[in-house]
Length: 550
Image (cartoon, rainbow, N blue to C red):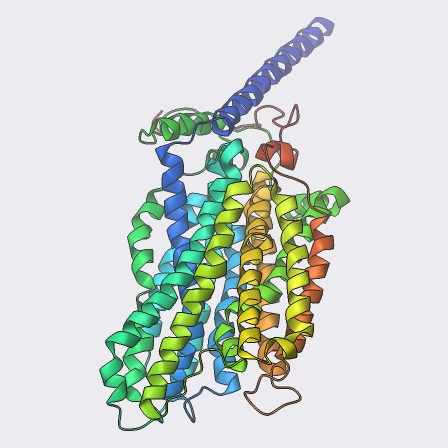
């Protein structure tokens, strides 16, 4: 009996020794595979990821900001006195951010649960269908077209929301360490071109329908303007359709395969095929050795972010995005209102000529704002984000925005006293757009895609982004309800105080940025603490599975 007992103990010891050695091999394999990704030279595949993800953000921005111009067109067709009332204007503008918030939370969680690849493209299909639905919306006795647009724009927002965590995480997990910031910034910078394209299309369709507008028999409910907003919004689905195939065929990220599916062998194989440009190959008959590594559960989530060193990062990314979007969407979705308040570009003509001139001026004004501030800001971030670092760029942006909004808000009356002063106001407005993008608007997208563990990376990004959209919703509702306080309707008497409120939130963003770590030149695993020795503890029990016919 004693001999049998000794033999049994010896056998168990050998099994554990073998298990430990094999676990060490899996750990080494994971590290070697990650090193290949982190040290890879920029390749065609990296460029493809940037383009495929970037087209989505181009579409996002086009769809979001086109309504800033389309709402003016809708007012001429369906509004009273040539304008949508306050509730209608608020509804069509705020529906998308509300949907986006839902989509960011939902798709962020799903991407960590079922995979980045399985969800990538689904959000784009939602956007395409909802955009097409808006363009075909009609008015009837039992259907109000504004209500239909609000519904479709909410659904479109869900798709747009899904694009944020998916594109951020896919681009960060495929990028090598030294170019990760630039890759993610290039993806996000497509927003600027989407905003520009919306204004350009608005200008083109306005010019194309000039004769039709001028021929309208009335300046009330101008039916001849109806095709303009349908074309403007409907064309937003075109880039999405072009990008859909590539999104559906993009490979799963190796980090998801390694750390969530815990299939290190398959991830190592995928990395080689991705870096060499070959097709992904999966041997269905090969045994799967599941690594014994931390799993995503609600309890693990609470434990991980319950630690201050982890929780403060999620707090910092979430609040920074919230504070930024208070001002970013407060300005971006109301630029035409602000320009009208300061009488910049307001037409002096009357009748249907005034309708054409106003639509043209709104489009041109948004083009100027895009070219003068939005687009240069993104690419200034692109140039320095991997050399300066993310945190210095974000801090600098919040500091500059605080100063600019203080000047614009407290100096509002003097800046609108003379024509030359109004030009100074527009310059400051463009400067605010510039430092939003050469600052926190870019970095609040980049940092959450880097700092969280793989098993919570998409969820953490989704929570951070949803916090931003909560800020956008508050800004939009607040702007609509506050802008006329203390003055006549549509006079924008309270706009100067709204700008002062924006300054306060930019100031708070400085302090939330201090909670964040610097992420430049660090691997995703170094940032999340997944690079430590023994992260892979061995092979999961009962993990060696073969197919039925193996």
